[in-house]
Image 1 (cartoon, helix red, strand yellow):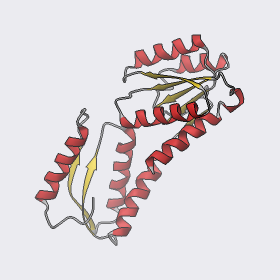
Image 2 (image 1 turned 135 degrees about the vertical axis):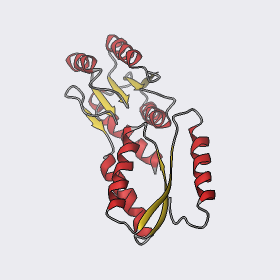
Image 3 (image 1 turned 180 degrees about the vertical axis):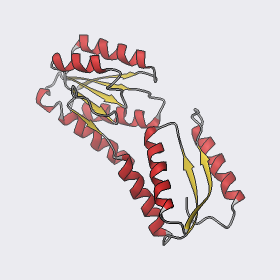
Image 4 (image 1 turned 30 degrees about the horizontal axis):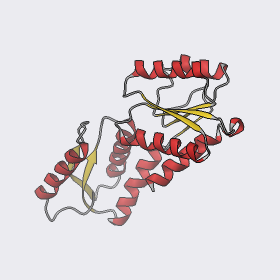
Length: 212
């Protein structure tokens, strides 16, 4: 499901450059922080989709550094690619580079970055809607009663929004109780942190958990 969604995002992004496409089309893709799986998935999907079209693709990783991100963007403007895709970028902080790209006639498409008047469009998930759908999907399966555990991550705006929406849903459905929660740490071994945290909660609440 996630892989399909990412491929769809990549396809949508490439639509923005279709008019300029030819055998020597050069596409640049910037991932803001490729150590993040979500950033890497988007970049890799865009790269693969462009290569399937026979396009020349340059991939850059800003490594979460805003100054490096702006520097990479500036350098791309000098090479004048047919288009630029930016995964999880910062249009407000890089507004000058977005403006220069538009003035140079270089189309820019962003993914999960927020909109910019200088970009073609931003491909994004409505985190508020996604949070509500996920919460209600779980409550439907619980028949709106029972005990749940939650796994949260406060370091990302998307997961933070979904957590807040879950809290709103729970506040209106008081027969469902959150009996334990774990907040993920931003570490390279985040999977281990999530597994350890959730296993500890499951052991502590053995026999009492109806959903996660």
